Length: 196
Image 1 (cartoon, rainbow, N blue to C red):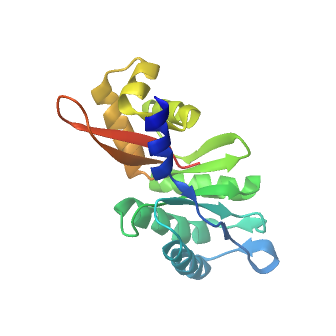
Image 2: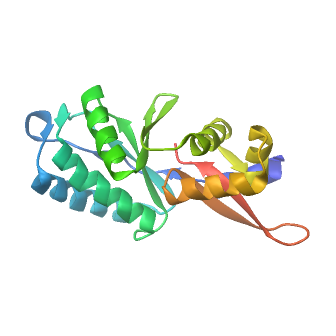
């Protein structure tokens, strides 16, 4: 990617929104009612923040979260995000102990959803993501920003197959797709951008 195009894409890229810090009585988040309360608070936090931004979900003050609470909050949150109900906003897990991550992963697997967990430079997928989409995601995470043609070249796969995978990742809220005008000969040019 040439520097002028890269600079243009960086101007449109996903920004980091203020983190949402979870906390509970004695570090415990439990029950569907508490999950519903957290969902409403989190939705207000997301809607008060910028669009085209990724919000880190910080569970550093949570020592335990049960499946009911996680299901009520995360399932509904991700469904709202992927439906486009709240615009171009994204979330990822930024801080969580192993117990909380396992609970989140279990809920996401049950609901056939996925979320990204970022720990320093390491990014992990929690939930369900098929291998072909994971391969495309891994390439995008390494590049941070790329066109479908660039990812197709990196994977050695047909561009139509790669476009389908990238669009699926975008619908899951794991990547952001930015339009960058038309290309010579017709068609549209999209850049896919990592949210972490």
